[in-house]
Length: 222
Image (cartoon, rainbow, N blue to C red; front, side, top):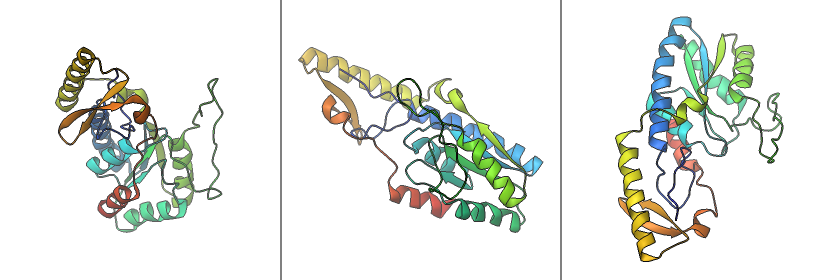
């Protein structure tokens, strides 16, 4: 019996995983604070949040904090378009910009110099730092000071939100009840407001990635 605990919110069979709301809250608070620094120093800040294969944390925290651009793994970004979007803020008299980047985000192939990073002993990619590389590129293209900020594992700690506490409690209770019924090999999942049981084989079939329509929504409001 399993419960879906991952801050990446990347399990397709459940509407949400516990830990995600807390991670988004931590990232959003950090972005709110960084706006003050960015404005006072008249800089571009590229803030790297977690998300190796999916950009849910970047999308939600970026929208919540009113970031000026978001890049996610699901959609290789166009460096020309990103530079234009950030540059327009300065042309309009604004003194700073915040770009949120999921750690797994990458530029469109051939659009800019990009270090893919090496592999670890398990064959997983070791990211070379999208925030660092992107801040260098933006500074060169814009002629504005740009700095990377990597939130890292701070997103995984701290006090859970009330939403995550309630969700985890509900998942736990339903998991125990399923064990009593002899329903092994399943995972708890949230569907709407209901907790349902899903076979583990189905739960691990695919990742829940950010769909194009959700990214389009973010583009319209940023």
